Image (cartoon, rainbow over all chains, first blue to last red; front, side, top):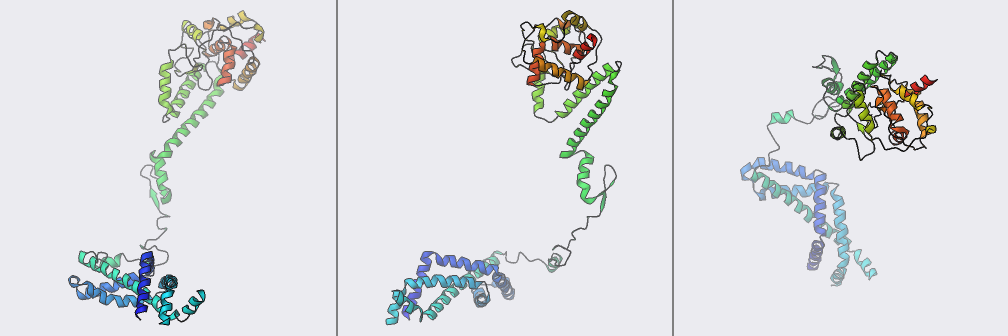
Length: 108
Length: 335
């Protein structure tokens, strides 16, 4: 499994180097704003803040509250599929580069 | 190599997908974190709740979504049929026509001055054509010519109010008045105060020996072209036979009409000038100062003495419509 992990790490690194990861990130952000995911999540944040009191809110609170909801709703959004396709494409092309690694993994 | 890859991609498909899912979730989490940081910063800086106000105001400015009404709740055609009272003329004007009406009514705005000057010009033309009909009376002659001059002068000043050429024309006027010899060949005297009626015979003589002196019919201006030193003119070039008798006739005192028997005289003059044009003979200016104070005579003097070449050259260059009324009147006498 470490190979798997290595593979993943290698792909990540490759993505960052190429600037592809950044591009994918921006693409995802744009899509999420477009479909209203960001505003929904912000409204949820407002509720949390009103609940907790304006002065005592911390980042951790927000993160722990908001992130799972965000993750879940992003998966449901249709637009994010476009991003996931892009991710898929770039990852798979990179995988081909690393196929020797996989090959060695299989044989191991 | 390829075959191996193909074989690999089959079983690794799920892995590939898992990998892809992981990377995708990482990206989503990054986005969420970004949002959290942004909100937290807004809260701590105090601008997070800025877009909210109290409930009443929120209700008041809520977006309206009814048919026939815009998002502010305003009706589209509400003021279309209303009428407003103009403060100037006290009339009831439709709302959509109110602003242009006000522009014209108060005399401000771009178009109103243009329209007004155009109206004045057309009025002048109308009254001028009316007065033309009265022209046959000798009695009215002085009045008419003076009036026409005044109107022409007024029209000219009216036209040139805003044009950039105005200063140029003023300069021109000041410079030209006294000059007898000019480098440029053809100029107009802008001072319409000179009319041959007002000048005495000596002044007219001196004027006409140095300058052309023909008064244009349209603009009522005197040509200040310097009289050229001429060679002798063949008498055959003239259609008019007698020199001395002509001279005697030119010594008329009373003002003959500068009458615009326009079409007739201008045709006649055109014919003559056409016949004379090829013969560029020049003639010394006759002592036409004897020509009395009439504009027509002066024209005659100018046409005759200032020589036909001047006339032909003038018609060539700028073609002012010189009414050679004197020529027709001379013919009348001779026939």
